[in-house]
Amino acid sequence: VRDEPKQSGNKGLVSKHRVQEHKQRYEVTNYHSIPITVEIIDRLPVTENKDVRIDVLKGATATTEDNLNGKSGVMLWRQTTGPQQTFTVRHYYSVRYPADRELREREVEE
Image 1 (tube, rainbow, N blue to C red):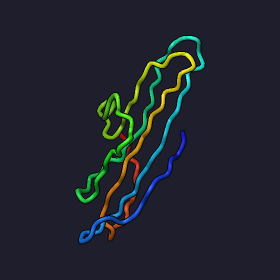
Image 2 (image 1 turned 180 degrees about the vertical axis):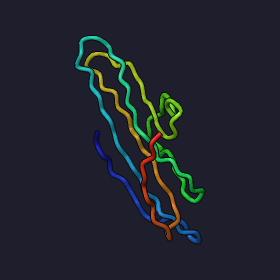
Image 3 (image 1 turned 120 degrees about the vertical axis):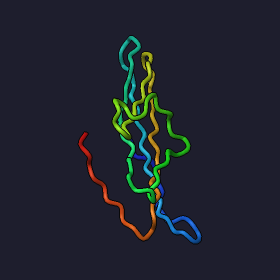
Image 4 (image 1 turned 30 degrees about the vertical axis):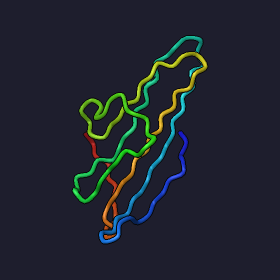
């Protein structure tokens, strides 16, 4: 897993918002002599607040499946990778929220 350059800041002229970008890159290389299927599972934040928006950013790798096993925000990328090949997933998203608010993260057990 590699963190990539990200940006945060305020946007908007009248209605100020904060935007946090999150960018991670996963690289898995197949060192076997036969093709293998690689699966990468990660999460996208899920919001219950209509003032908070989560967007997948340009350049992100398309998922194989969203809301894996009925769990909101859980994403799956799957690819069969040949010998000596690398499977790369770019997991890029942004969180946009009002500048006058603070975000609080919490884990939800399902």
